[in-house]
Length: 86
Image (cartoon, rainbow, N blue to C red):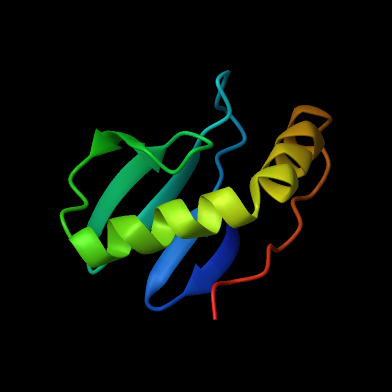
């Protein structure tokens, strides 16, 4: 599962074997979650409110890039890194 962005100790990844709707995964301090394009956690145990807020902020700012990576993944192409939050 390639990492596509890293910021503030949060690692954002995408799986090649996922299916619609477009998901991404995040890890922070040993906790993990699966997120939709809005940054809403749909599965997981990532409990840090700060990390969840940062992930939502990142997802909203980079929705187009996340979708573009999804299309690359479906085409069997390598994923591109997405700008981290600063």
